Length: 169
Image 1 (tube, one colour):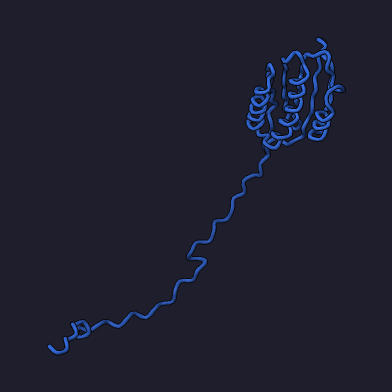
Image 2 (spheres, helix red, strand yellow):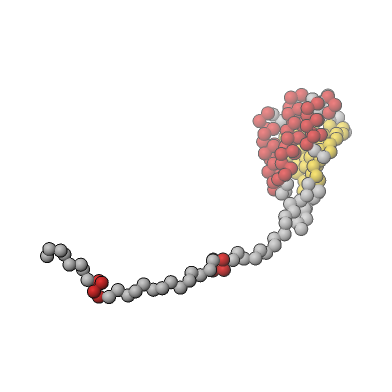
């Protein structure tokens, strides 16, 4: 069984509408690299919802995104420095979507007055079924019986080989 090595990724970004798509692709690439293909869609959708909310409502667009993978759980955290926007003021659709797509979520305040919204996903590391040797496929000779001996055609005589005579010649 393959054991997962702990992984960590940190990204600082100044948000704009076009940067949200770039961040989504970056996170998806890291998840695929960590062999967490099944988590790409839910993690990217949750992060996308948070980043769009920050982009629409925050005056400070500097955001930090972090992902931790410990072999069983992936924790994604999005931090912004906006003092005025708290998660309970965020559009209900954003937090509802995060709650629906994750196994757990929460938020906490930072010392600088901003907030961190985090969510977690449970998954197994890229466990693969062990390769089991398969028996070789039967060869053609084993699956189809050989044809029975066919009688050889009679040998043609010299007379049979002669050209037929032309009529009227």
